[in-house]
Image 1 (cartoon, rainbow, N blue to C red):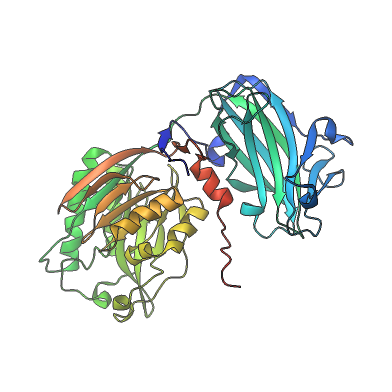
Image 2 (tube, rainbow, N blue to C red; image 1 turned 180 degrees about the vertical axis):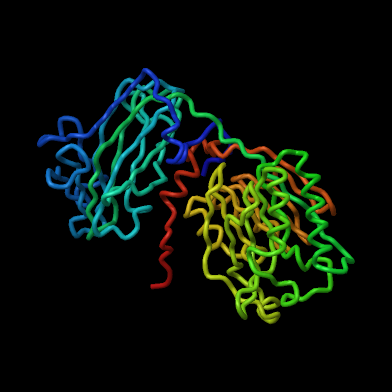
Length: 440
């Protein structure tokens, strides 16, 4: 296998939410909304082999705007794979293009894997560079979903193929409609300043004293103007003689109120771990405090080690993501990083950064969680590195020094490119087996 040389290129596919902010240029502008009765004049049918070709049709009864749509059916064939292809001339290498397509389906079990829209770049005859996958989707109403992508064309590109495919869905049918391919202005970067705090208070008389040590450090790191800062796990118990039960409190509660004051004072988000009481249950919880001091979300640790279950903690059951004003984030806590599923679940929901308050753990696995899911990971540890890791798993910052902290600027619109494989984030989302078949 040829060696891989990883690099970051400037600017990635924008998330769908950002697409409306991208201005159109005076270049190529295709709106494909009516397919008529002879779509082969513009679209052609493609499959790797005739015996696995799905059934193609134009449906005048099911459509989003104009009175027909492109249809594909698995036609009771579990191996069926193929789609509609539209060839485009007039592409200019290095310029940016957007592809938007709408779909609705019946009998599709996993749209992430079984539906595919992509741009296959050409020099007029042959492929150049690597295809770009549309890997984000959102509901658009009336049963339709929107897929959108903004990417630069490879330097040698002169044309492109718009490919709308269905695969491995014997009982499935998809309709594609309202397709556009347009040259757009170069989108802006998506810069975020993320901060990580390496602090382990010691010999504190109370939980309030431990928390105050973190609050004081937030004042110091705030001078670096972070958008969001990660603190450690269990900041209400570290360094003091408290127990899980004695330090547990509701959320919102006294500690989130104090964190909220600092978030509001400095205009930043804060992630921190503490112990939450709800009825008789006590959870190891990470909270997200927004820039105005409100509890914007919380995550209850799903994977508990025996030390915590024997200490009376209750595991959580959900791995949510949270929308901020700079992007989508997820949170894990300590032992979660030992397992592949938590980070995978957050990435599947669109997390761009995972924050990890952690007591101690395996730093190699932390780097693996970032690399295998192509996300940034920010940790704040006591007996393991406090770090900021990029989507390759490479270290932007790492320390075990007590009291150290750092803010690093990252760009969530950077593209993770492999010269042989293309944009790894897009390929990951579209080629990963989210269903993970195991056993027989």
